[in-house]
Length: 209
Ligand SMILES: C[S@@+](CC[C@H](N)C(=O)[O-])C[C@H]1O[C@@H](n2cnc3c(N)ncnc32)[C@H](O)[C@@H]1O
Image (tube, rainbow, N blue to C red; front, side, top):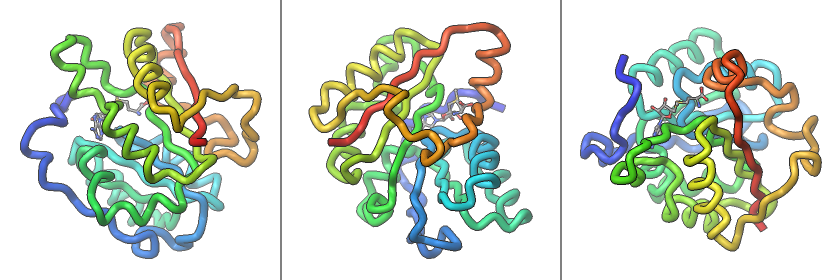
């Protein structure tokens, strides 16, 4: 399967609209966590099955992965997990998506595609305009988690988010982990690989002020 998809390809200009919270989840009032670039969604399955008092919404640009994850959700009748296919930036930019923001408590960018060449930086999912959109719509107190094993990408994401005055860095020790989206500290697939191969992990958390 192709690992890297160019999110700027015109194939992704047309988006799948996000259904309403009531259509996606059994209990639409629960806290909502968004995972941007969730791949096959295994991390979200781990989370959703254990933390039934949270809703989880995964965005992924590789359609086949999303179709498989969606059918696993249906087969297992999981009511607090939903997957959307497409470029997360375009989807969340859509006017119809704005209604989900009121429930969002946190967002994760776990090991996003690095796009190493400078001319490809614009394909990275963390972009100033996207962060501006999040700063406009996220409720105060909501959190952004970033994690990567690529130092250059970490610096780029950190700079992009920190340049938005509505986000402040916070320390991991100031987070109430049992009440967070990931109280069991589940790992993503990439994170498991990185740990196994003893690579560095660079991570940071930001709060919307
Ligand atoms: C390196 S993988 C990491 C997957 C997973 N988060 C993990 O930690 O194991 C990055 C994922 O982000 C997806 N992706 C990249 N750009 C995206 C975008 N603009 N919108 C949605 N998904 C995107 C890729 O297709 C890929 O599955």
